[in-house]
Figure (cartoon, helix red, strand yellow):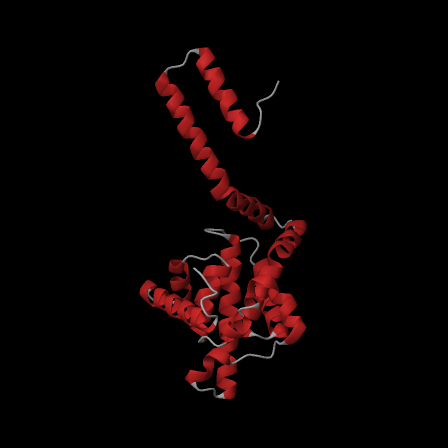
Length: 227
């Protein structure tokens, strides 16, 4: 007979500990271990999956490359579209990021979240394209928040989905740096400190951009956006 799963398994283990006559201290230690394992499984299981994928990716497993692409493509295209508001350009950004990622297979080392790494690459690529577009159009700084608005109608609604669909116009009205911080933190789950490193600014600057950006969104959406 095997060990039952879930919490029944915990009680099964504890019951056998009592039957075996272990001390109260030993039982407490086991309970702490079980609690730690529960928290670990919730917090780190996704990262373990990513590390396994990256290990196979480093070995040149083509099937894993496809799995990574299919796993993150939609989220990354949504992020790029929300940053640039150009559907075709957003898809080009994600394509370029994956081409570069595939080319780094042998030397790539994962130090954090794979989703966070790919999101950073998308944001960097999108920012470079945004700056190039500003230079071409000689856009004034106070207009930078609404530069790219070529993505409209059902196509963009389909890309954004329910999560970002209602925020589209309001996000487009934010200055680019604020939009980037809000999207990377709320949508891609990146820590503000990691965003600060990516943007090469202080954590206080990023916190300010996040606070002001979120405040503007709340104002435009009449309080519908929450932390």
